[in-house]
Image (cartoon, rainbow, N blue to C red; front, side, top):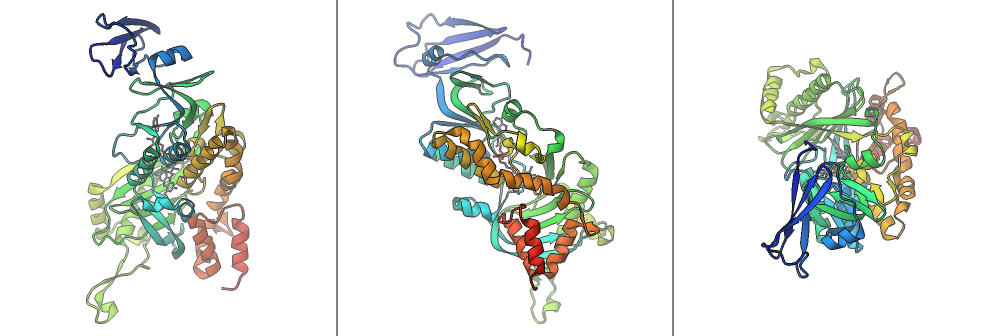
Length: 492
Ligand SMILES: Cc1cc2nc3c(=O)[nH]c(=O)nc-3n(C[C@H](O)[C@H](O)[C@H](O)COP(=O)(O)OP(=O)(O)OC[C@H]3O[C@@H](n4cnc5c(N)ncnc54)[C@H](O)[C@@H]3O)c2cc1C
C-alpha cells in the first residue's frame, strides 16, 4: 500500500449513531475531528470500539491513559493462529480463567494442507479428539523404495481427519471455554511491544492490547520470524499432494510408501469423503516435476491395485470380495503406470483431484539447541516454534503438546518455564529425529534403510511390532536402533 496515502479511520459509538469521531492519520501524524453534534466525548454510558485503519508500520504508542480513554479490548494472552496449537492453548488457558483472544485469518472453509493423521499416542493423551469427525485406521500398507509390500495390523489405531473438521472442532471447544475468537489476520508488522505488553493491530485495523503474545501461526509464522528469527530453507520440508475421490465402493487402503531415490515418503490417507494423497520431502532438493511424476504414479497405482478377488477365485461366491492384502505395484515403469487402464485413471484424476502444497519445519540438529520458543511476554507453539518430526513431518501431536505445556506453565505463574518444559518433554526426541533423518533415508547394508526395515519386518514379528509402535507414535527415535536390534535377535 502507498504509505503516502491519507488514511481515514472511524471510531464507532455503538449506542448512539449521531456521535461520530474521526481520526485521520497522515504521514504518521494524528489529527482528531469530533462530530459537532456530540456534546461530550467519550459519553459516560457508551462503549466505544475503536477501529483504526493505519498506515502499515505505524502503530500508536500505547499508554495506560489512551488505553483507558478508548476502552480498547485488552487480553491477558493474544494467540495468532487457530490451528491445533492455537485453539488448544486457547481452550486450556480460557478454562484456567485467562482472558484469551484467538485470531485466525484463514478464509472460511479453506482447509489447511495436511494429511490429517493423528497418532494413537495423541488419541490416548487427549481422548476427546475422538469426538471430532474422522476415521480410525487399524491397518496400514507400507512400501519400500524398491516396491516391497508390508501389510501391518496396528495394535493401536490412529485417526485421520479432514483438517476443516478437526480445526473447527478444536476452535469451537476454545470458544466454548471462553476464548474470544476473531476471524482476522495479524501481519508481521502488526504488533509492537512496550513496557505494558503488546499492542496488536489486526488486518481490519482494529487495535488490541495484550500482556502476552503467542505465535501459533504455522510453518510460515510471521510472529516467529520476528521474535525468533527466520529459518533457512534447508530447515524446511515441503509437502504437496492431491485431494481425490474415494473409490466407488468407499473402501480405501491407508498407505505409506517410501520414495525411490528421494528423502521422504508418499501417503494415501482415506478420510470420510475423500482421499488425501501426498508426498513429504526436503525443500532444498525439491524438484517439482520429478516428484509430481512420482505422485501421479503412486495415485494411479493406488486406484489400479488388484483390490478384488474375482467370484471364480472364491468358489461359489457370486460377489467379488475386497482383497485387503492386495498390493499396489509401485515405483517401476514395468508396473503398468502407462497401460490403457492407467491412462483412464490418470485422465479421471486430472478432472477431479485438487492440488495442495505447504511447508513443514524440519529443524537441523544444532538448531534445537539454539532456537527459543519463548521470551519476555511471548511464546511460539507448534509449527511456528519448529515442532515437527524431521523424519515424518508429523506435527499435530507436538502442536497440541506444546499448547498444553505453555498453558500449564502460564497457569502455574511461571510462563517462561515453558522453555525447559518443552525441551524436557519432547525436545530431545525431536533433536534425535533430526540426527536420524539422514540415516533413516540413507543406506544400510548396501540398500536403503527403509527397504531393509520393510524386508526384515515382513519376516519378523518383533520388527513388525516396533514398526507398529513407531506409526502409533509410541516408539521414539532415541532408542529405535537398540529396540530394532533387540527385536531382530528374538526368535520369530
Ligand atoms: C501436506 C502436509 C501434510 C501433513 N500431514 C500431517 C499428518 O498427517 N499428521 C501430522 O501430525 N502432521 C502433518 N503435517 C504437519 C501438520 O500439518 C502441522 O504440524 C500442524 O498443522 C501444526 O499445527 P499448528 O497449529 O502449529 O499450525 P497450523 O495447523 O499451520 O495452524 C496455523 C494457523 O494459523 C493461521 N495463520 C497463519 N498466519 C496467520 C496470520 N498472520 N494471522 C492469523 N492467523 C494466521 C492459519 O490460518 C492456521 O489456521 C502435515 C503438513 C503438511 C504441509
